[in-house]
Picture 1 (cartoon, one colour):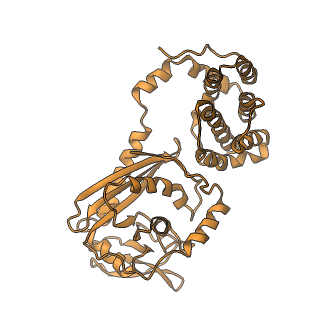
Picture 2 (cartoon, one colour):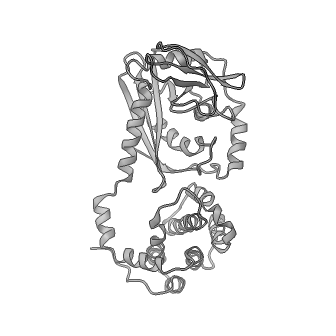
Picture 3 (cartoon, helix red, strand yellow):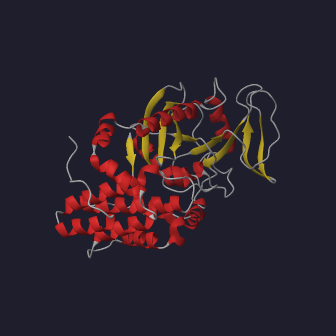
Length: 378
């Protein structure tokens, strides 16, 4: 499993993401036939989410296109890289999908996405986005027609009908099993629609959905479960750590935890240099009208490189401010409930890492009380 870090400069707002879509959409190639069906490799990609834990898991599984035997597989797990915005789902998924693809020990060949390519309100769904970024031939195979219209194809396997946006054909409804609901195929990049449908038929010898999609779905869910389940040893240490229960009690007594967290970060930074992300977190904490921008700041922070323990702890405190602000603004989806409990323990870890009594005094004043002694759980 590859751990995914959100790339530096990754879009954090809807406006930034739309600008990226506009730039990349012009690079989609629609006039290449693509690889012949049943030859070489074909790779399925899919993702699974745990919004409560702010996790996304992606899987890439490569099959021999002729036998449908598994050749290679890989997964990537990381933080969700973008808020939920219809039409911009690719920005939540692509960092993890790219990590999974990069970890494959075999060439992926044609990539089959669980979703859309040209069949997208802005004609640039996940399959197109991924294709342009990687240069790989890609197609999208979706379970429903999204906002588009179609007439049902005949009941025979292999029958098709146009998937339409008005009079524009953006994909096809394809019957992969006799008398079973069709799937919805669209071009991503460097493949024709006829060829995309032919590939899907070779990938559906038994079931409605392609083998690539079925296996990638299973693999990404397995990876998400593994990432979500607590390590028993770490959970036991946390349970026995006096700082954890103290941190919870301290947090739950705060009437305004966002502003409180800002004061703690201010005390930790002191008169030292302030990276732009730290300044942004302090400004966010001080302005209730900006709290709705918490997830935007969190996404920005997740893509920030960290150098050394003290900088890592400062940025973690800033992330907690972003989470608390997002939650306090009533925004969705909700960040993990336990975020605020970590402020006290993180502040004391920072005091210990600094080795400066003045830093400890500032932090204890900002926290509102002296915490337990800094000792490792035994």
